[in-house]
Amino acid sequence: MKEEQEASFVARWFGFAGWRKMSASARIATQIAYRVFFMIGLAGLIIGYGVVTGSDPGGLAILTMVICWYLLFQVMVNFVFIEGSR
Image (cartoon, rainbow, N blue to C red; front, side, top):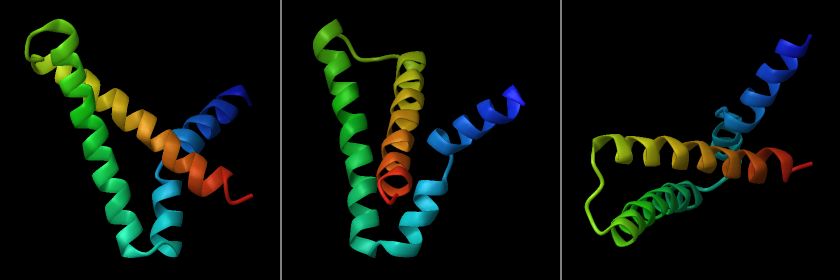
């Protein structure tokens, strides 16, 4: 029972349900805007890392930033298009 709740939580917040809902209801310009926002946010993370550390990020640092930003972005999209529609 608890595993189902955890899987449901993960699927709800980190799954692609928000993108599917957006694809069905949003205009193409909105989808493009969200994808551009994702890239701008990722660029901001990489630039911020360089400013804070004073060096370019290595492969592991970039991979970590991409994964963390992707998960955070998925949560934001799911929150807006799934939770926000209730």
